[in-house]
Image (tube, rainbow, N blue to C red; front, side, top):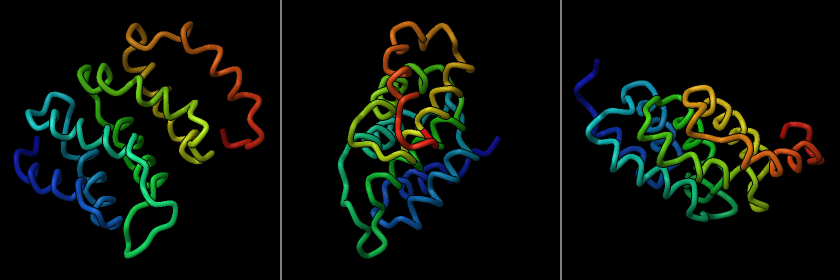
Length: 144
């Protein structure tokens, strides 16, 4: 158990630079668990990175929308906790079927959703999501 550096991790995740954001999300995945007291602020930051449109191209080492979404999805998949799954599973599902999501982001969202379903099968129901999964199977990009 690591009880230090949580505020620094949060500051790095909120950073506008890609390199700092990448280090922050990596530290987040390694150091924090779902029952951490700082998880509410982290959830808000993850939700913002997943839903807020960013620049289409990187300038001054700023993360693009798909890189920020990819980092957030990887962290969601690596952090366990019922509160995290309850809060973010709908955003992950929306990212998976969004027309604006790139194939790379859709692939990461599918893997993240798989991890969430395996962690808590009763919370994420497959019946309500099956029609969208059938559409994804017909995607032109084989990575999806």
